[in-house]
Image 1 (cartoon, rainbow, N blue to C red):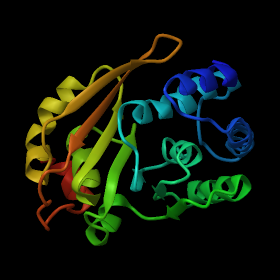
Image 2 (cartoon, rainbow, N blue to C red; image 1 turned 180 degrees about the horizontal axis):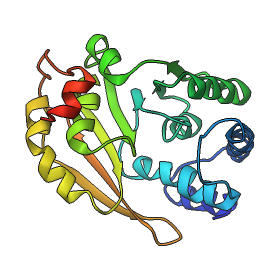
Image 3 (tube, one colour; image 1 turned 30 degrees about the horizontal axis):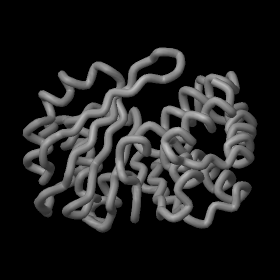
Image 4 (tube, rainbow, N blue to C red; image 1 turned 60 degrees about the horizontal axis):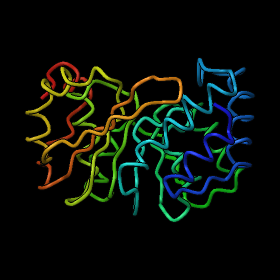
Length: 229
């Protein structure tokens, strides 16, 4: 996918894209990828499709507004993409690996993004204090849903959304996570199926927060992993 194609697709959805910002982001991603493992995708057209365009898909189907936390941000997907496209939205990039936070800070500095906060902490620790203050919590390729739910849902305020970006094989994960979502305060799942230009399928799962998460969640990560809800 060429960047002009991404711009055209976004325009059809009423979204304006800063081409220069995405070009600079890609240059930085490739430069830093030589020093640390940020992505296995290194062809520019694949980066545009499988990272940048892929991270636009939740914006196409959900109201991204207010305060958003990207849990396990990695190289900034989808949080930095959101920050570029939605300058009026406050984005928190939560990333436990210090080296990746250094990269995120460099991108934010070079692109002059004013709506981004970078937090170098684990989700289960940050979530104990920063509870139910975000309009949206989102995660991309971080963990199975029964683990991800406990890490992400406590951040979301009542009336907000937890969004999970998955491939096509999400149904089995969801069946194992149904109790977790109910216990943590989420309502009925909404699923939007999308396709990348190459034909690869994506599933955008969103869960409305309808009641408070019990104070005992999130638990320590060892407990979450050993005994998922």
